[in-house]
Length: 158
Image 1 (cartoon, rainbow, N blue to C red):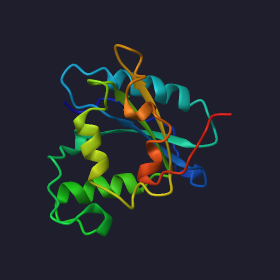
Image 2: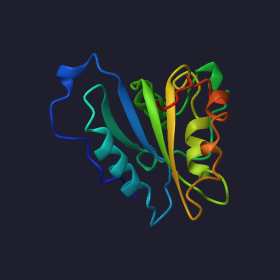
Image 3: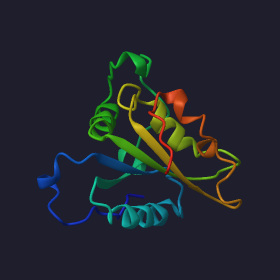
């Protein structure tokens, strides 16, 4: 299923000095709620004028289980889908991962999409919006220690 969420129609090219933040739809499951939650996050974020926001749906990249022959840390990608994913992700200064809680964890598709890349995530701020039957509290994404393992810059809400 491809995402139907579109970024706002306003011309954002005049705001190139503002950080670009990807709101990443972290589920590819049929019947997923992640698109609606990501749209809600985008609507809230778009009220801000200090950054630009774009919804990025991992389903649009049809990433297979990690199939690169060289570890992502090396930065040598051999498949077109990895190049496309890396190009998209590297364009952002920060990320908000919208993730459901599946069996007290994040969806495998999100973990896989994160694992495909390395340098593209490093040193950038990441946040999580998790949801699920128990409010998304049991996802590893809800653990503030977890993002640091991917070398994200820590960020706390004021």
